Image (cartoon, rainbow, N blue to C red; front, top):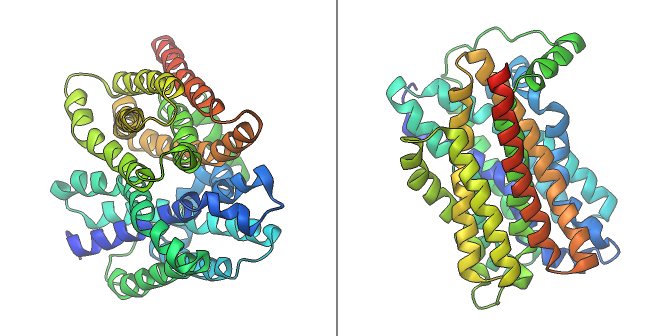
Length: 384
């Protein structure tokens, strides 16, 4: 199965299912209050609680998934995701729904670790760069699909129907991939895991300004990405709401794969990330001056697209060894989950207390902090 594009695209499809685990709650966020009227600002946790597992296990997820074996982990994660979505379709009490979201985080983390690893294993040397670039679009594409199709489907058929559809999607990919992944060659002997090795790994990662820099910037990017797409829709004109929310992640992808790629030919990845943070902060000033302006929203998406691709590109630029790259990617998973987990609840609490104006202030501050962190880490690298 080496070099099989249908199999690699199927694994990308499984990744879409993982991203939909975030998106399916984000695009119906304003409907959740009617289901759980007692929740208040805690509704934000329904979107982001899925990332808790990744916060604690993100940096060591590859070790754990490898121990279980990547094929088994991926298939188990798809089936677990399907079962959890079936449970969510019952609209259980809020504490149970929050527990289901926490369990869903296990499925999500296993998928986002196993799928790209299997893609890299299947792809030839000539295919690998393109295959992993396509993989990198999974989050934005999933949000666009959910905004353009999932939201209207939910409005017509109800919230349980959306969760049932997601369960069917996950199960379908599990059934499709199971026989096809059996033909893969035996994976390497998995590494041993101990408390001392986990502690040593974290110390190694976060004491290095080379290894941790992509992750530290990614923290501020992810803090804003999901939270903005979640809380912004009610402030948009209803006539353009679905179009704008669906277009924003696609604009980010388009800019990442065009302007971002061109800039990476003449600038370092870190410099492109810094430009993205600076432009995003300016866009938040624009959105403060022109509340929920359509052009400002699309400009923000474009600016964030610069950070999206360049953050992944910065990993091999800053870390020349495979070990360093693996640690940097693990740290990105960990900080990405931390950002995704904190972003929406923080925004929800701020919006409940201070209204729309709090969103551009908080997001603008996060973008500015991301720029400052990269500047400090660049200085630290010069002193390493």
